[in-house]
Length: 295
Image (tube, rainbow, N blue to C red; front, side, top):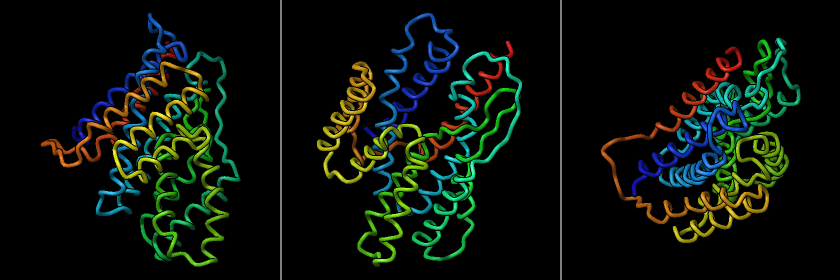
């Protein structure tokens, strides 16, 4: 099974999940059957995306460019993510308030994030890539509500989970190169960024989404990675969420890992498929939310 097949399965499962969230009982309640089945099917998606991300981290020839693709994905997806999934947007409300506010503490978090990227990745060089990093770091601190509809909220999209995982992987890969002062700085700044951006991100509960990516990146064999996913599914959906159906579907993604063949190639190249599909389909769902509120 090629990466393209894995991503195709994950995209389909993700779309089913998101349709269940927006139109099911957690949203507009327009689905004439139990939408929890759709949400459960969607549990297949994140583990596959996490696995593909870990594979990409090791196989890419340009990790910085890979990181920037994810960063731009975070920037492009944050407004559509808020529009599509923020709970107040999924119910009829009479409020017509409009407001824009900036959480001051995120200015500090953004400075820390940009400094770490400049100091440790760019090695004190100034590049245009600092712009998307700064934008991604600032967006979670901005709240925008227009006529009662939230365009930006405190929750962050799944790309932030990926970015925090990349941050951890970079530190692990370069830990032997840091001097004492750098290690102290990272011991202070690292947990700060993980708490600020990792916890409110999609699959950020207990930073377990980040942990899954780290596990896929560090375990050497597909069998170990598949077993790790099954255990992760039991921990996340079995104990924390308490949903046996979601646990089962999440664990089923381990089959994709076992059948994955890194040498399998496809004629259709889809390196940027997820980066483009994710924000576009969220924007469509967000626009639907606006229409449903004004129906």
